[in-house]
Every structure is written in structure tokens, then in C-alpha cells.
Image 1 (cartoon, helix red, strand yellow):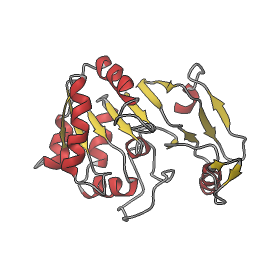
Image 2: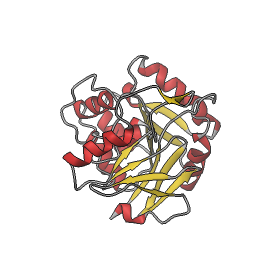
Image 3: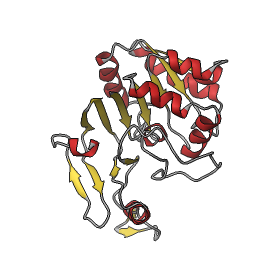
Image 4: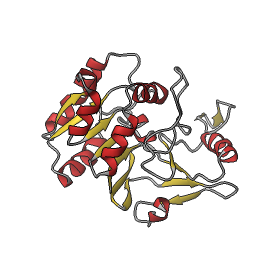
Length: 242
């Protein structure tokens, strides 16, 4: 039993924070009558956890959800056990995973999520719903105890999936590896794992055992030694949960 909303990103260019995402979040919150949520700010690095909490409180207040941050809790594990919903924000995935392992919260959150507690994540917060953090786009700025994550899905998510390198004036301005190249490298090292490239302004939603794609763009599914395949939000993607 999993009830998950996994957003690729928080903010599109030129929009307010969580601008595009709040419509999906509000629908999800209404589905599960969410009135309070415990926020996990540990992916934040260049700003304080207090600031991150305040940044998230405002948009959630508009949809009737009161948010408080786990970094203020004397007993974080107890807070997770009592939470009606957990929200995990984006930032640096290594920093997030380091703190979750340090405070013994990875298994605590996983257990609650498997019981059906609603879980909302974006960017790094979506990546950690995967078995590991290994398809993050982030620099390893800190070494976590383990790369293991919540393992709420049998596949890896690559948030912010980009189709190609930047093109300016009809010329590619970056000669390094594309996102597809990086994912192909991962699959050579992990041939039994599927990777889902989740584009900006898209989300995966899991209601019990039903998986759907939300947003106006397709997702890209990568398997070892197979051509990537595209799936629209009208397509059946249940096979990803098997």
C-alpha cells in the first residue's frame, strides 16, 4: 500500500515556487484528506532549514495544509511515526540521504509509506523513493552512510530529465555526456534495474497499486540493451510496478 506523489521539479522558469506543482499537490491532498504534513528539509544546503521550512509553509497554507519541519523535532523518528503525511523537498540528494541515514529516518519513513501514509516529494525527494540515489543529477558533496534509499518503487527515477545538451543558435554548446549517456552508464553497471526519466513539470502518482503519469509531457523508460521508450499520461504504465 503506497500513496505517493513524486514530482520531477518544484518550479518552472518564471513561475512562483511550487507554481506548477500545487495543482497536483492539492488534488493529492484532497484525495487523502491531508491537513497536516511533516516536512523534511535535509536536501537544502545553501540556505537554512528554517528558511526552507518557511518557503514551503506558504504555498501549502493556501491549500489548507499546515506544514512543520522535522528538524525542529526532539524525536524525529517519533515525529515520522505520528505524521499524517510526509513531504520531502528537493536540493542535493547526497545531503538528504546523508541526514536520513544519520538520524535513522530512512527505514522509519519507508515503513510509514508502506502502511499507506501519503508521501510527497520533488526532485531529490522523488529520487529517494527509488531503491538507491544512483540516478540523481547531483554532485556528491557529502558521503552518506549508504546509497540505499526508501525503495518504495522497483525502478529508479531520474528527475529533471533532459533530452539533449543545450543548443544555442543551432549549435550544441556543451560537449559532455547527455542525460541519456549517464543513464546508459548506470544501466551497464546495473543491468537489472529500469530507469524512468521524469521531465520537468511532470509527476508520478501512486494510489495503492495504481501508477499514473501526471503533467503534459511523456516520460522515458530505459532498460539495459533496449531502445528507450516514451509513454504519455494516457498510456498504461502499470508494468513499471512489477
